[in-house]
Length: 238
Image (tube, rainbow, N blue to C red; front, side, top):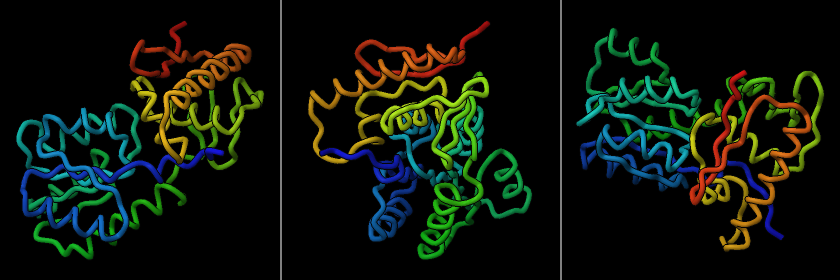
């Protein structure tokens, strides 16, 4: 039987860095520690890659072609994403470090850096974001409240019973409101095992049942089908 799994087990660490040598060093150390790594070489494509890969952590150079790291971080935080962000930068001045943290980064490491220190910082960020006190206790959209720690969903003060898969689907969408999640991305977050057309169809069935339960509970959010692609969740406008 295929079992659901946490999103973090499937999601990669995304490295946004235009210097090939730095990319190679960072990738080698992260992969040696067991992380799956995706590399993006410019700021212009970084936001699209973030949406495609749904990373568990983002290692972001500040000086990039196209959009710079500060612009990327700002847009990611405006989208509502809480993905941990670690800046890598040759800009060592205190105002730069402070600015990076103020716009939403979780850490700031100055080049040249020790790869072992980088790995330790990534480990620490993921511990805090995935199991620690900085993880959100409740995710809210409209009148829907989802608690990852209590594993329950409350709508207008009433608890709504969801299956494990329905809860995982709702959590994945609520973490990224307005983002289109493909069926493949949802499968990666929910399941281990081989992918098959039958599995993709099962996602559709679970989303259909989840949508019915939200409607019955008078949730003022909508799960929107993007034909041929996947799903997104939005707050309904009164």
